[in-house]
Every structure is written in structure tokens, then in C-alpha cells.
Length: 386
Image (cartoon, rainbow, N blue to C red; front, side):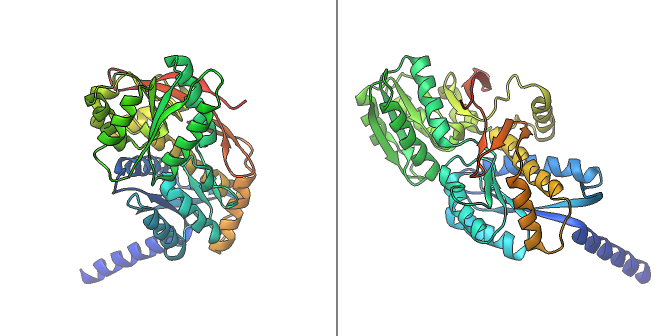
């Protein structure tokens, strides 16, 4: 009996070693805890669904040979310092060939520097701050940039609300929120038909009480309030603004797009608009197929970060395939992946068709969605680069 058990253990050991030798290891630097855990969950769920598809078909085919995928998920706790430490762990300890994430610019900007310094390809699904990829040839993204998103928000609000004045409340310690707030202010105040930003208020990441900032905003009587914050903060700000008597519209950005927004915000967010990467309600083709599968598997409609993680991971896999071979030397393999990724001219993603510029940033359309009474994010309009 012992001999049989020992033999079985040896078989399992050899199988594990064979898997490790033929597996392509990709790291995921995502927030599974901290302020935005739903973002990390969505990324992991989408990646797992993609991995199951490919491994279930015998692996990823590269140069006539199939390789199993080994995805390593590490929690960056929604913190910048943790995101850097996770990147180093994935690069040095786990010897991954590429990293997907971080998502939020607050973590993606510093982690991008670490990946670039260590010559490891990184693709952020969700970060829109230009600094994430700026002058970093090893860093790419699947999302549009804030210099594009800012005008989308401003133009839509002016047209839809007939707005002349605006107010902004943002997270001063979040690269994404602060950067987009500043871009929006510059765009809005440069518009011929608009007036001014009558209140420009900041808060901290851990703040729960926004009454002081919102009192200033309400007193300024803006035509609308722009909130480029993460979904958990948005829910608190919108509710507190209503409690202080504000009756006007809100305009949001892509960080609103979590599946958990309506759980936290409820009816107070119904009827509001935000710019984002794709609209789940009314989707067609491969996008609808992804949404239906994800919803059936995990029990809720995938948000934009789930769809973007799918696209970001597929970008890495396409680069691996186009490199033509899988080199056992991880440094050489990383270089081959980076070079292949930099040569991708066009990519058909479920968040849209995209091409890439010299910074590794995609040129793609944005959409504006409206939150329906059912809590769905309904397509309103698409805005594409000129």
C-alpha cells in the first residue's frame, strides 16, 4: 500500500514539474483588499475565465507547441507601496514573464516605474493617468487616457445639462482623481460657451465626511458636480450632497463603473451619467458573449475593469504568440514579449478596437452611460478620437 501511495506521489510530483516547465507564468498585481476590493475581484474573475478557456483547450499555442498558463494573483491592498512590493515579488520571486495590473493609477504609476526599471512587460487594464506609461517602454495599457476622458466629460455635460458652471470634488492623494480633476478644470474653463469651475474641492482617500467641501460646493450653485472618484467614495459624496440640499446632476468618470456602485449608492445614483470604457447593457457580439458568460459564472454583470482585464491579458497572450517561441531564459522571454507588444498595430478587444501610439497607449473610443432605475449602465453615446 505504501509503495502504491509513494508511486502516486511521484507521479503527481513529476506532473507538477512538467506543468511548471511548460507553463507560462503571468502575474496579476490587483487590489483584493483595501479601498476597492471589487476591482481586484473583477480582474481575477475575468482572468480566471480566460485561463480556463485556454488551459481547457490544452494551452496557449506558441510556435506549434502548447503551453499551459499559470496566473499568479497578488494583493496590492489598494496601496501604492504595496503595489511596488508586489511587482518586485512577481518579478524576482515568481519569475513571471509579464504583469497585468495594477488597475488604479495610484498604484499603477509607481508600479509601472518598477516594472520598467526591471525590464518586465506590464499592462494596466484600468489606469488612465498619462504618467503610468510616459517614457516607459516596458509599460502598456488597455484603457484610454485622462487627457481624452476630460474633454469627453466636459463636452457631454455642457451639451446634456446646458451647463455654464461646474464644481469638482476629488481625492487629492489619488493620481487618477487629482489628474483628471485638473484636466477637466482646464478644459471646462477653456470652453467658449461655458463659464467657470465655481468650486474645486479636495478630500483624502480615507475621508468619510465630505460635508465641509460639499457645503462650499452647494453654496456656489453649480449647474453640475463632477466627481472623478472611485465608486466607494462616489456613493458617500452623492448621498451627502443630496442631504445638504443639492438637487442638480452629477457627472462621473470611469472609476464609477464598478458592479458595487449601486449596492452602495442606490437610488441616489439613478439617472446620473459617467464616462467609461464599455456599456454592458445592450452589448452585442463578443462583448455580449463575455458578459453573458461572466454573469452566469459569477452572478453579476461584469464592470469595465473586468472587460479591460480580459483585453489586457489577451494583449499579453497575443504578444507571446507573436514572439513565436517561449524562451526558457525569463529575461529574454520578457524582452521578446515587450518587442512583440510594441509592434501590435491593431487589437480587437471586447472594450473596442484599438491601436497603439509610441507610448504604449491605446487609441480607442470612450462611451458615456446613464444609470437606469434598474441600476444598469445604459449606453448613451460613443466618443472617438478625431
